[in-house]
Length: 154
Image (cartoon, rainbow, N blue to C red; front, side, top):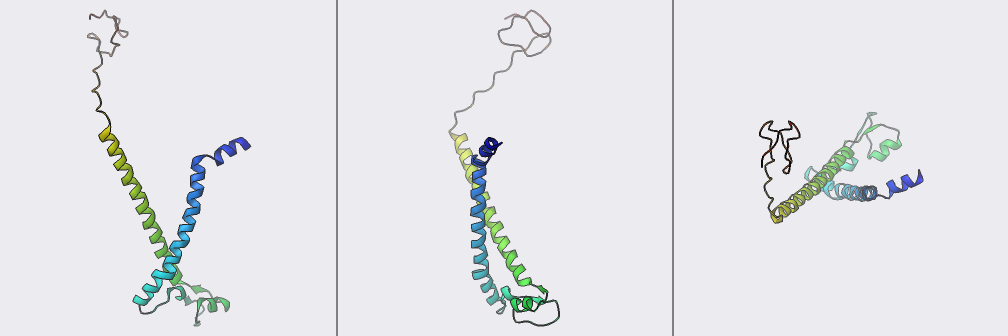
C-alpha cells in the first residue's frame, strides 16, 4: 500500500496540482490585497467617501462606529461592504483565470496549426479490394474470397 501511495503522491500530475494550489492561494491573497487596499478605496472615493471595509448595518437597531465595536457589543451585523469586496475579489480572480486559460488555448491552437502546416501531406487512402460476387472487402493477395469462397481472378 505504501508503494502505491508513493507512486500516486509523487506522480507528475499530483505534484503539479499541489504547486497549483499553493500558487493559487498566494494569488488569492495578492488579489484580496489589491481589492481591499487599492480598488475599494478608489471605489469609496467615487461613491462619496464610503469605506466599504466598514460598511455594515447593526441588526440590533443600535448605531456603532465600526464593525469591531458592534461585534464587541455582541450585536449581529450585516456586513455588506465585506460582501461587496468579496464579489470584486471573486470577479478579478475569475477574469484572471479565464484570461490564462483562454491564452493557453490560443497558444495550443497556434502550435497545432503550425504542426499541421509543417506536416507532410497525407497520401490518399487506397480503395480496398472487393469481391466482385459478394462485394465484401478482401486482402489484396487473396485468390479466393474468404466470405463467399468464390475464385478470384487477377
